[in-house]
Image 1 (cartoon, rainbow, N blue to C red):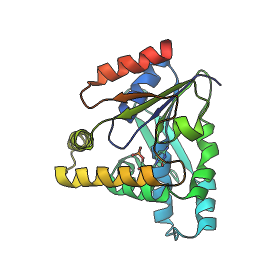
Image 2 (image 1 turned 135 degrees about the horizontal axis):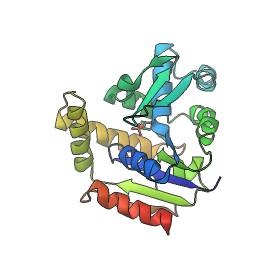
Image 3 (image 1 turned 180 degrees about the vertical axis):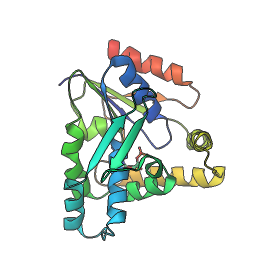
Image 4 (image 1 turned 90 degrees about the vertical axis):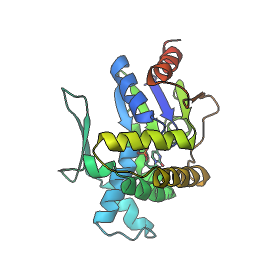
Length: 221
Ligand code: DC
């Protein structure tokens, strides 16, 4: 399957929004790989698995009972873990933090690899994450790496939280964004970095439409 658009970048850059709209526009499937790491972190937490126990972590990853359901009307994706809707708790900063920590473990990444690759189905796939263009879909013909200043990403994250009716404090969010960047970029296994052949777009000063135009142009070229 050659129709793959990989969209990578740091937390809060807006990858999810761009990926969702691009998937709608192209009529392709969507993989939110961060949701897999987040759900995995929730499963590990619920089972009280010791995160230094790699055998136990691998077993949780292999047996992860995870499904994505897209609402026909809103196109919003609900995530079910062990048959329970975890969409809301999945998106919290706390879950993101747990996911980021646990995602640095090599055996976890290896065990979740096939699950991600299986999303590559006709007519095409838009995949967002940290290592879509470098590892999971290293042969993808279309690769984008989105960046933005940490300040701007924290601002976007705060807006997103407010839209969900959740309180947030700018200085805390900024500190979390910076800490997560540091952890995701400095890890040994599949660190956050642009693929050599990725189109790098600094979105700090760009609107969603302007980013979409650049990504669309890449895919249609
Ligand atoms: O994109 P996100 O914020 O939902 O991702 C949550 C964490 O999961 C992120 O901080 C690092 C990890 N992650 C990863 O290591 N590789 C991916 N492809 C996607 C997410």
